[in-house]
Length: 70
Image 1 (cartoon, rainbow, N blue to C red):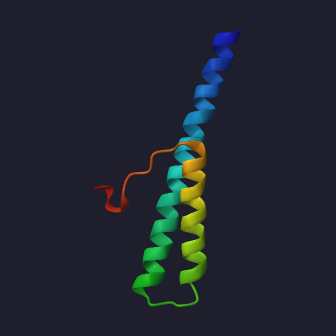
Image 2: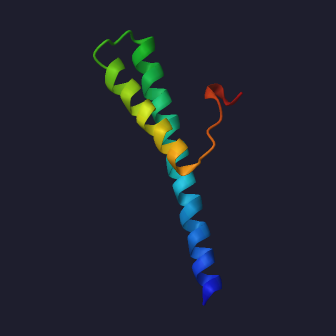
């Protein structure tokens, strides 16, 4: 019975890691687009979203690679 619980827990954790990484990647992309377009209206919310996404990553202990995959 415990093995099934552990397996489900591992799947749930993997899903959280995937979702958090995708959120950071999306936020970086939106911020880059706003910056490239010099869109002063889009920059503040894009930066806020990236900060929130990175905070969530830290909260869950998700390692996020540097921008550009370096």
